[in-house]
Image (cartoon, rainbow, N blue to C red):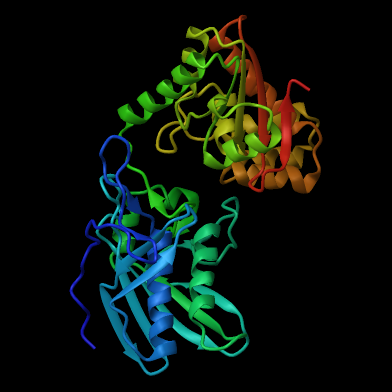
Length: 380
């Protein structure tokens, strides 16, 4: 069957099922949808076609952010027991390298109940440790994996039916050359990403301004203790650890560590806590207060020095020095049960932050793993 002409979502109000179009943010910029959301939508469309025999024109899926979104099906092809559907990635007003790319999903039922994910054309394969994904497997991150599995489960014709799902992005290998995937050991294409399903458009200037404004609002609310997180997950983990702190106290600073710290000092905030995971903390601890992935890189040699100071054996120090990512270093440290390394990393974060805020502000740091467990803190 010939592919349908690609169509992009058009703004409209919610229908009776609560389906929403891509919203706009507070600055009027249109948000978009992640490759993970597109992959899940394409998977649900293909699975529905196999289960019902009716080719879908649109498909609605729930997003982790809480809304239900309807996607036009831009490509549809079926050959017997295999169906392939595609969804055009709409990144809204964000300058995303994958904006306009088509994310396709091929679905074939399995009798054993397993849901197996595969990398098709334009989707990368993981070749190095440290990404939290199986080496040799498709570069599909955990939340998109959950969304794809949920799409299959919602459409399977009977309980216990599994599926082979192959995600592809035509032209994705060329697009991947404009990313850092190769440096991270992801070869052959793009990663399937997303934790909320939504892409929020931020220019660097507007993102920085929003961080500073959040600190301003906290100060205006007489908040004495501000918790600066490097991302949404670390903020959630910090909220769980500090439930007594008011909502205004939590600021997602992203990559703007130095800017956020200086703003806290400007307002006379008496206590600042930094919450993050190993990747961003490794950069801050080394003195890089702008932590964008495309800018300052993690220095495995610095992490190896921390290991040596923590009493690591020479073999472990060498392994950490050769680590592919900060997460890889974390895995090595945890496997070796090296005591004190995470506390030492948090201590370096505190030292760097203290240099910025000065003696009038006490600094604390919490280092979490990817499941929210507290790995290290400073001061003890």
